[in-house]
Length: 268
Image (cartoon, rainbow, N blue to C red; front, side, top):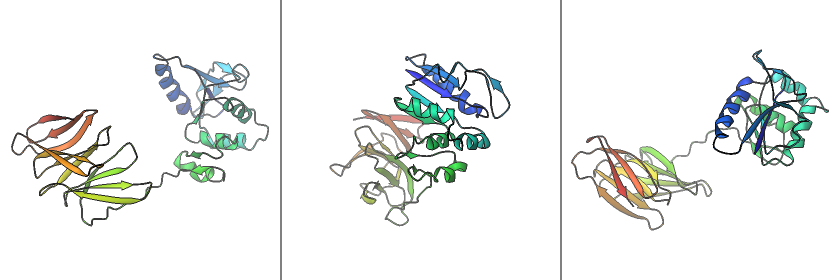
């Protein structure tokens, strides 16, 4: 697989050197060749004044499997984007046609947008350039804006969250001893009460979408199956275990007992 990073005068060195280093090490374990390219194959001066060599020209590498477009000096970006005959944009269009992956770093997304390569796609960029990207009406711009979604039970004391393989979000409620589930596809909530007088501390969802919670009051790890809506409790064999955080892997649920300094395992 061949990955190319086409650079230009005024490019952001971090957007080039960081990925190049990462891909270098990734290429140790798999067939990945990373090339830094310039229009004529000559050296380029980065935005911070550092001048560096490249490995090939655009003409030398007419096709890529992965296109990686770096950001750079906003003034330079404006010059490239305002040039109808820009060789840089022409190269992006050329290699993107058969590339498996077309990627960018930060404001490099603006170059892809100007080349028409983000039309009909969802994309984002550095927060300072979101408004610029939004000017391209054919792009669904992800602004990163957060939306607060409150559980329906007031004063529930939401404490921890985890999502399952379907994107549903599970929340542990400390004050009311419940587990809540928010489904973003339907924008609806469901809630279930844990057995007994519970205080749900943490939550973790395993690869099979079983929900695991730690219950402070009953000194137990609790397994919940959303499909059957049934709970199963696994109490600690020690008093005041104060079981807190949950994690695990396929077939195992791990609970951290802060009162005993133990990590306990429940095998499912």
